[in-house]
Amino acid sequence: MSDRAFLQGSADLLLKLYESRREPALREARDWWVTKFHPKSAKDVLRIWVSAESAPYRMVTTHWEMAATFVALGAIDAAMFHAANTEHLAIYARLRPYLAEIRELTGYPTYLAQLEKVVTDLPDLEERLAPIQRYLARRAAEAQQA
Image (cartoon, rainbow, N blue to C red; front, top):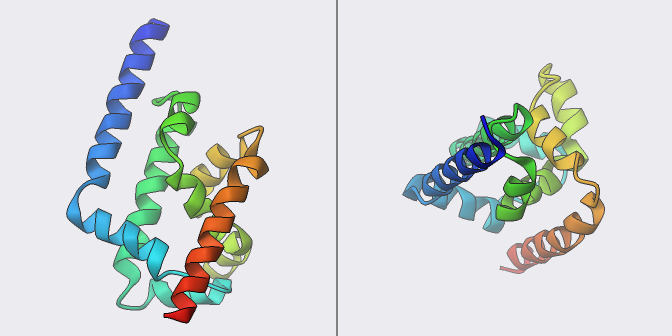
């Protein structure tokens, strides 16, 4: 496959991922992540897994793990993926402090491993995460005041 054909295929897959993000249930789940999901520990995250809010949590994490898997396995060009998306960085930023403990507590050592790999492969990761972390902190503070 030529580079041009690969990039066209990457673009097509990215558009399909974007289309799926517009689906109402996933859109609502993504909004929940920003406005209502503000864990302070791995146990907070695990409580969500068994609560009524597990569906939006799972929808968002599995969507971005699947997308990252496409990148990690070479179906989507990594540079194109990162240029077209930032939400995967927010998902990782929100869970990064708890991932090791979540994996340990669940006995699932590869939980969100593809997402983590794709994100941590970025050479400018901390620079890219900084504004996202500020945004997430602001949203958590707003939720606490509401």
